[in-house]
Amino acid sequence: MITSSTTTAVRLASHRLLVPSSRRSLSSSAANQFRQKAQANNEENIRRILPYLSVAALAVGTIHLSKKESTAAENKEKVEEKFATYWPQNVMILFGPPGAGKGTQAPKIEGVLGIPQLSTGDMLRAAVAEGTPVGKKAEAVMKAGGLVSDEIVIGIIEDRIKHDDCRFGFILDGFPRTIEQAKALDAMLAKEGACVTKVIEFQVPDKVLEERITGRWIHKKSGRSYHIKYAPPKSMKSTGWFTRTIVPESMKDDFTGEPLIQRPDDTSSALVKRLASYHNDTVPILKHYEPAGVVKAVNANQGMNDVWNSTLESLKRN
Ligand code: AP5
Image (cartoon, rainbow, N blue to C red; front, side):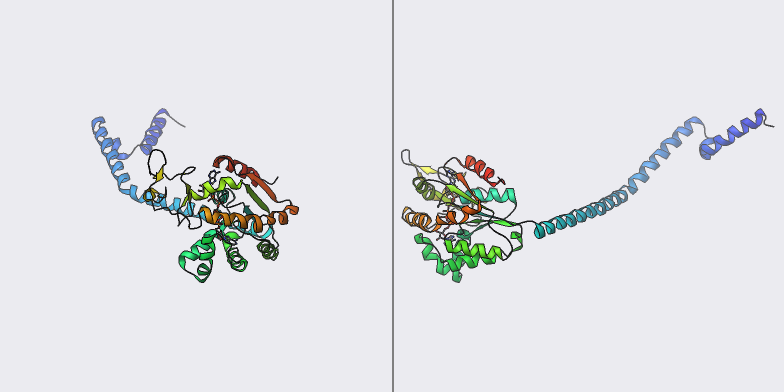
C-alpha cells in the first residue's frame, strides 16, 4: 500500500538523484557561489580543450574535403577519358591576312573552348629568339615577310599536336598557309580519325591593315598585342601637339610592366610581301575547305568587341 509518506520519500529520493549531492546540502548563497565556481570551471575546461577540439574538427573537415576533392578529380578524369575516346576533336583554323585580328581574338576563343591556340608565327619567333636550327633558317625569311618552308612548319605542328593539351582539339593560328600545308594537316588528322571542324575567316580590306600592322606593339613573353590607337598600353606616352610621337620607353605591358617591342616584320615594306603571299598562297585554302561546309566568315573590319561578338556567333554549331 502506498502512503503519502512513501510518496514524499520517493519524491525526495528522485530529487536527490537529479540534484548533485554537494549542492543539496548548501544554502542558497553558497549555492550561488558554487554555481559561479562550477561555471568558471566549465569555461576553463572548455578553454583548455578548445585547441584540441579545433584541430580535431579541422582534421575531420580536411579528411572530408580531401575525400570530396579526390572524388571530384576522379569524376573529372572519367569524363575527360570519355570525351577523349568518343568525342570528335575540335580542330579550328583562324584564317585571315596579317593584322586581321587572329592573335587578338584567339585567347578569347581559348577561354571559351578550353583548347589551346597554336600560333606558328609565335613558335617560329620563339625558335628565332632561342637561336635553334629552325630559328636560324626562319629568321631572314620572316623579317622580309616571306613564308617559311612547308617542311619546317608542318614538322612543328605535327610535334605540337601530339601534346596532351591538344587531345580535345586546338586552334590553329597562321597554319595552314599553303595548299600543301592544308593537305599535310588533313593527312595527320586523318591518322587520328579527326578532321578540320571549323575555319573562321576574318575579313578585312587590305587598306585597313597597314595602320594595324605598323601601330602594333607586342609583349614578347606572352604574345600580348597592343596598338598605339586601338589598344594602347596604360603606360603609353606621346609628345607633340600636332603629330603625336610615341615615346618608345613608355610602351610597357599592362600586366608585367615589361617593355613592349615591335616585330621586325611589322613594316610597310614587309607587309606588301606578306599580303602578296596571303592572296596567292593562302586564300586558295578556303576553296579547299568550303565543300566540307566548315568555313564561317567574320567581319573583322569593325571594333574589337564587335569582332568578338561575331566570332562567338561563328563558334556555334550552326
Ligand atoms: P604570324 O605571326 O602568323 O603573322 P600573321 O599571319 O601575318 O598575322 P599577324 O600576327 O600579323 O596578324 P593577326 O591577325 O594575328 O593580327 P593581330 O590580332 O595581332 O606569322 C609571321 C610570319 O611567320 C609570317 O610572315 C611567316 O614568315 C612565318 N609563318 C608563320 N606561319 C607560317 C606558316 N604556316 N607557313 C610559313 N610561314 C609561316 O592584330 C594586329 C593589330 O591590330 C594589333 O595591334 C591589334 O591590337 C590591332 N587590332 C586587332 N583587331 C582590331 C580591330 N578590330 N580594330 C582595330 N585594331 C585591331
